Length: 108
Length: 122
Image 1 (cartoon, rainbow over the protein chains, first blue to last red):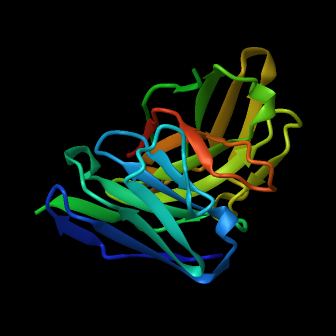
Image 2 (cartoon, rainbow over the protein chains, first blue to last red; image 1 turned 30 degrees about the vertical axis):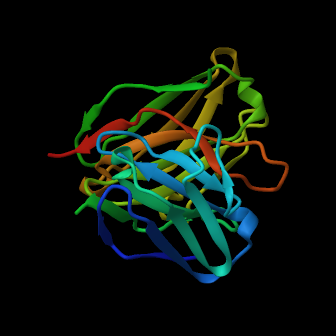
């Protein structure tokens, strides 16, 4: 099973700042099969990025994804108040599908 | 618009079974796989299984083999997840999720149900 390790566990930033979230895989993941989700308290996750770098429908362009192989990054260029949430990476390259443990982006 | 509406919260005793439903609307039910993902209290996301609504074919995570059964009723565009032999560590929110159509063998999960809380306690 592919283990995804996200870092940092918590990111404390101010609105307007840039957020950089990391997702490292225990074995290579074809970039086609890497996604990012956002989850707010009491809500279901929401798809942000698929195929490592493609934004899902309706996702603002301040969200971007990059990476390949075992290292992937989600970048939020300028944090808006509604972006403070939990973020998960997800690989669907091989079964079982797995998720990272999450990175919490909190207001500093 | 695409919607996945799940059944309500359940409270079960250890050893019992639970069956959660997921009513799909706003798209052709048989064209998209349905997955189940769970989230224990304060924890991350764990993939459980998928079902092909068209064929009824399934794939279960090793951790749940022998305890989970996914079925569907295409006449009412509903998928079901049944989990048996419940333990306290099965306490979680269970989400049904649609797999996107992306032209490759495996796709991201694009629409999520609202979640069903399953609590297991004696």
